[in-house]
Amino acid sequence: MQIGLLLMAAGNGARFGGNKLLTDFRGKPLIRWALEAIPAQALAQVVVVTQYDAVAALAAEFGFAVVRNDAPELGISRTIRLGTEALAACDGILYQVADQPLLRQETVLRLIAAFRAHPERIIAPFAGARRGNPCLFPADCFPALMALQGDRGGSQVIKSAPERVFPVQVPPEQLYDVDTAAALQVIEQGGL
Image (cartoon, rainbow, N blue to C red; front, side, top):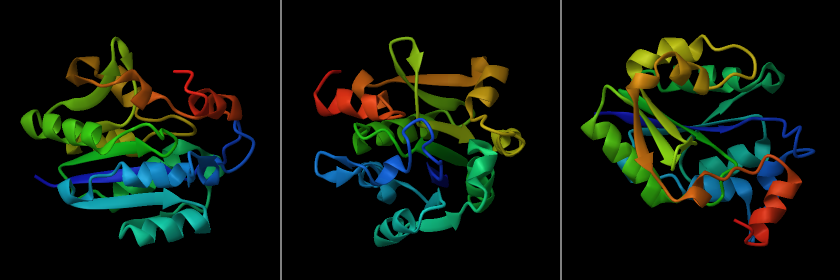
């Protein structure tokens, strides 16, 4: 079974006030935390979609393929479309955001294992009843994912087929994403 991973790292960081991916967190830029959470050995291919030269260079250091998003203002749907096209030969794609610095490889491996056991399901991490990212979609979901418009992500596909979701419970802090400078401050100070 061929499983790909799309790291979505093309956003403008409007709520953060700029490119948050190069912001330092515990001695490393946020994007490095995301790249280090990817268990490349368990994946057929990793694609990083970005608009940033520095992110592309770092992804290349890890040996990951880079796809340029030249129109990030079109929203996350464009990143999803570009990455899904690049990984279209896969049986499933894990869609990982780049701003969850507490996400760990072990958790990503658990999501991959759940997909291998349930390849017809959408695998999603949960902390209690709260769903988070990254989610792993089977190939039959790719057309719906590529049809998304604007700033709409995989949640739209999940809402149309909630019965397909296979939940994997994970530590709640690993689902915490850094959308704002204040959110980064909360985890820097151990406020979770």
